[in-house]
Length: 215
Image (tube, rainbow, N blue to C red; front, side, top):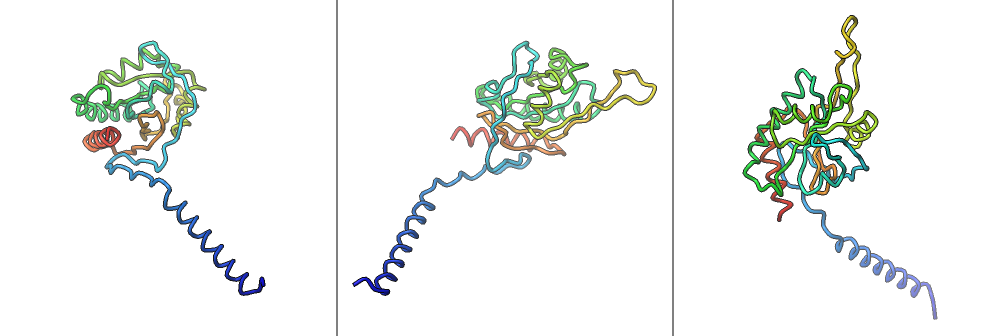
C-alpha cells in the first residue's frame, strides 16, 4: 500500500538522484584553462569578439578583422602630432619589438598604431611616423565614424580638442586613451596594458603568451 513512509522514501531517492546528476554535470564540465602568468598584461577571463571594422593601412590595403589573426597584437591609438604620449609609448614598444626580432615571423607579436586624427594624418604619413620607431609596426587610420567604432570596441576613446584662442585652426590637439589593447591570435580583445609601460616586462609577457598558445 502506498503510504507516507513509501512517499518519503521516494522523495529522498529522487533528491539523491537529482544530486548525483547535478554533481556529474558540474564536475564533468571542462575546466577553464588557467591564464598564463604575466607582469604587464592584464588578461580578461574571457576574450571579447570584436565587431566588424575596416581601416586603411599604410601599405594601401584594408585592415579588417582577418588581418589581426594568427598573432598576439598590441593596439595603440594616437596621432602623429602628439607632443609626448605617442612618441614615448611607441619608443617603449619599439624596445619590446626588438626583443621579439629573433622569433619566427609566423608567431612574432605585432604592434598596431592607429591614428585617430584623419584630418592631418594620411595612412601613408601614419606609417612613416610609426616605422620611425620600429619597422615592423602596422599603421592604419580611417574616417572618424570608423575610428570611433574601432576604438569603442576596444574600450578606448579619443576626442578632438579645439586650438587655443588666436591659434591656427589646424593647431588642435587630440585627447586619447593611453592604455594599450591586447588582441589574441583569434583577433579577440584579450586584455589591456596600462601605464607606466615597462618594455622588458611587455616583451617577456608576449613571449610567454606566444609559447602558451603554441603548446
